Length: 108
Image 1 (cartoon, rainbow, N blue to C red):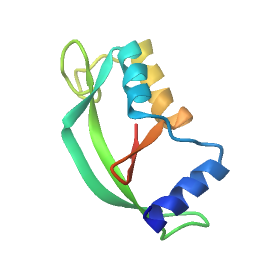
Image 2: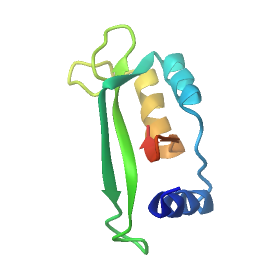
Image 3: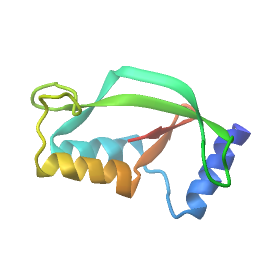
């Protein structure tokens, strides 16, 4: 395993966060009426900008989230902003769902 990835996973575990599977992420999104938009897949490197770990980097993998019924990005100006959207945002920012995919962290 990449040392930078291992360090980031250890830091997240120390904060009480643990990865789940991609299948579990898809199921949670489906329950809210969303799906991953894998046409937007992008591999990159994240750098922590503040705090005691500032300057540390780790491999990331990002993708899009779309409304399952319309196919529109969940973040498009005309996308719905209902209770399910607020639940999606809670999963992204409060729960912090993520998985490890092809040697990189994919945050929801």
